[in-house]
Length: 405
Ligand SMILES: [Cu+2]
Image (cartoon, rainbow, N blue to C red):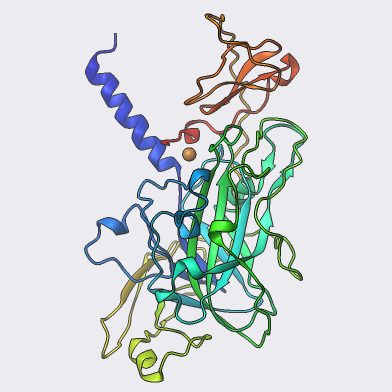
């Protein structure tokens, strides 16, 4: 019934859907003011992309950094990342709402946030010199039934936003905020975790005194950390969030909520008033006024706000920032579908899998039969031998569980 043409069309559609399923941060919101970030799926194809607060990276497929790259520069701020040209100002103690465009429900995992001092202008910083300290972490919230409720689920429930607080006592200066989720749907196998780090430049103000010690991003994780190589399809999982300990004096997370956007602003270009020692003239010439347009209605999905700068000796930075409607919470209806059960007849010399072992999934070449229990598909990447009673678990999201990689 299927001819070549229809099957290739189907393949193209599936491919498009799987790319669309992954996400990236589209903007950050500070006290109601929205700053556009880097769009890896659009900016690389623009002749003159806007200067934004988000780092440039080459994850044009919304892809990830794999554990085998944890010691490479790609783990710092995503693939082949270079510093953002602009920054946003935030006061120590304020919270930043990090808005993702979308996130697939199947890609469960922790949310993590780090800061690193730039010791100068973040827009020209050597990323390999950055030393990150962890200011926020959240892992599994409910492990009573596999694969559990995760911080990534909270992200999705809060309109794909994550709220992180800048430590109250942080010393004023320029910092890189490294925001990350680690998708663990395939992490039961070696090199199966997927890290999605993204970075933003901040100028922190205030009278704080602390700059906590940090570590190079290339030393944050190893591929075999218990929070990296981990099978999440077991109930009662005691998940250990990877990376260094939280700095003292901050809570692991602040209460999550969506921030209403009341205005948009352009990224500020220049060194900021941070810990740098850039001459005043250079700084003045390159400073772009972060024009803020205040709008009265946050709920109205207003079109776009254009702010332009007037920097005489500098290129004019024009930034168009779209203002999203600030919807509070739209928790997706939990879809409960009984996972399909398939038991395959064993052939050849491949041994049958033991209880709770993997028995299928994308790129899985091991045994597909279970010596005990039945092989249950949780998502396209992972099937597991589970006891019959446990086979009927809520499967993760429908089409959004596709993964191009
Ligand atoms: Cu994926």
